[in-house]
Image 1 (cartoon, rainbow, N blue to C red):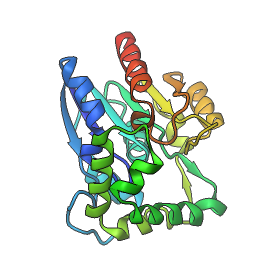
Image 2 (tube, one colour):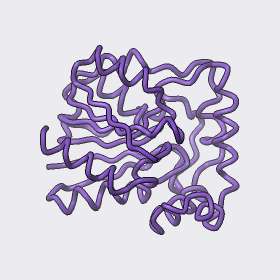
Image 3 (tube, one colour):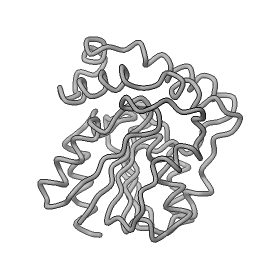
Amino acid sequence: MNALLIHGLSSNPAGMWLFAHTLEADGWSTERVALLGHDRGEPATRYDLESYIADAHRDGPHDLVIAHSLGGAIATVLAARDPAWTRRLVLVDPVWFVPPHLLPAVAADQVAELAETADTLAQAHPRWHDHDIAAKADAISAVDPDAVARTFDVERWDLREHAAAIRTPTLILGGDPAVYTMLEPEDAHAASVASGTIDYVVIEGAGHSPHRDAADPTVAALRAWLAEH
């Protein structure tokens, strides 16, 4: 069984270590994708969603795709366009919709992350594993700043129709709205109803990165869902 892992903006393949280690312990083989302009890759001339999709696409069918944040947005579109691309899909707090008036603030927040260091990350995220701190700090130092600045520098970011079109068995591991999430629960529930194949699980106490903020509940939810699918 093969699994494709796709990280989020200003992260890197190493940041998906928890999913890789979990799956490999359960007998899976894994491949981790580095997004356009990330992980010391060549800078790109464009950082629009379609460019990310074209660069991140790996021919399927995959037995499983796990994708976080921007990676979750990419995987959502790919799964909606080609139901045979993956047999199972796990979206970790995917970014489906940003209201137009909030796009500048989201873009600014992403740029502000570039000032983070291992020390500030450890202070801000005391529950993160040392591997997560090291991976995120390295990712920040290795990403093309233009990728971070330009990804959400758009007029529209709305993938909800793509989400509703997914027909692949899908698990959403969402951040806790009481903490922070980039996926509105209403959008997740609406997509679940429209699709008929989406299960939505909120990881209590976790923010936008459930696999970093609450590793054990995230792994438990993933394994329970895979056992049923």
